[in-house]
Image 1 (cartoon, rainbow, N blue to C red):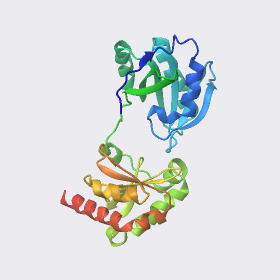
Image 2: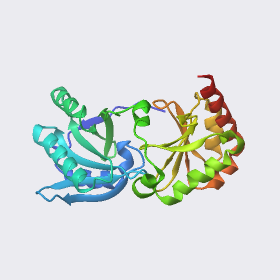
Image 3: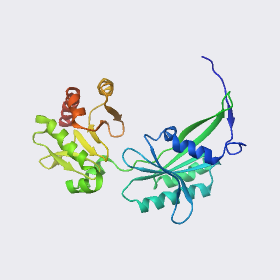
Length: 288
């Protein structure tokens, strides 16, 4: 192994590479942005009031990302244009959550301060793009998130917005994964005795005698079910489930494991370890 240095390249001043080429590369390889499993929807999307949105993506939960690219340093018109396109898409398609994304070669301190003001009100991500030339004359791109959107709200605030099953059937999810919620809840067996499903705006929790007792939660999406287990992180549990083919992660913000399920078979095939985690979560909740 050898440590080498590469020459930094200005894409804005490059004689052969233009913004269109970079845009097409990002659209075809959205994973380089490190924003999750993005799926491309449209490039150069015409806006009703004029202009074209550089790129539109969606993720697994059907959230939308309005992405604007600029070679060189960002400027006021770039920021305003990004926010205008974000606002237009948000108003046209209110059924989705929308995030504005700015990509530029140089996001200066001045404009980071400006963006941070918007970030208090608008879900806005700023990504700095850099390019270097490899030994064989190709260009290598890297993308660094310099500002992330602010996650608003807390679990306590979510409790204050109760809904009902009809809300989830018509507004939030695919009925298939709402049905999977029922199947997983039933599979908990004696662990759910005395509990019922409690429908909230952002998740489906548990209640006992009308009082929320969320040692587990369910979030049906359009293409999968997120099953949350509220216990302290245990790396061994996560590794076991991941090695068995389950998509699992630990959310530090929510302080729970999140397992993505596509069918009840995935749950039953791993029921021994999952039930152990549920038992621990129920015990921890009872001790609070």
